[in-house]
Image (tube, rainbow, N blue to C red; front, side, top):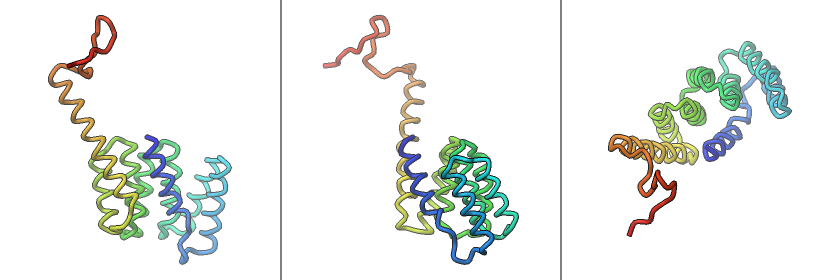
Length: 172
């Protein structure tokens, strides 16, 4: 989970830079939202990002910042919608697909997360975050498969645990 948080923070840094084409009003609202967020005034931050969206509904920036805030508040379902809106407006932005991947990962939708990370890597083959997310998902799915196989074979516990004594037993 710490790795996902680290990846998310890296992604936030990528998304934090407003686009040069953004209007002055939009930029001010995004900056206001970022300031509120940095001071842990999350309701005000969300309000500023939503105002930015109202001010310029064709801009992807307001949606991406709102999505990032929502993921950090464990509101991944809402974040998915915000990131989808950002992607509709800027379909070639690998950062948005990476962010969407993280939101899906928070929801436990591993296949969707992997698909979005793969799309990000297609758009930007050098994007390390997308590769890291894909590797994390692959490792997690491998662990989940191993646990499912253990349960299917009737041993939900790792081998070597003596339930009567509560101790580990070594195997020669």
